[in-house]
Image (cartoon, rainbow, N blue to C red):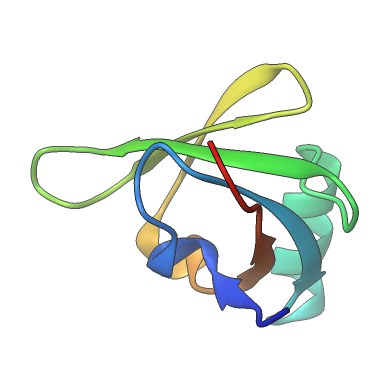
Length: 80
């Protein structure tokens, strides 16, 4: 199965986080917010001007900037 970034994930779809790229400080901050490999992330929608994205992860809603979404790779889930 191929991986894409959260930035490329269509709104309303889910994926399993496979990795987090970027500098250590950014990766640590994302991981502290619950963005962990193996977790399911659902992209709910993008803001009207395209930034930020509203995501559902580990039972709560999280806003991600487009630059942060580009650092998170996911394996899209089939169906739904």
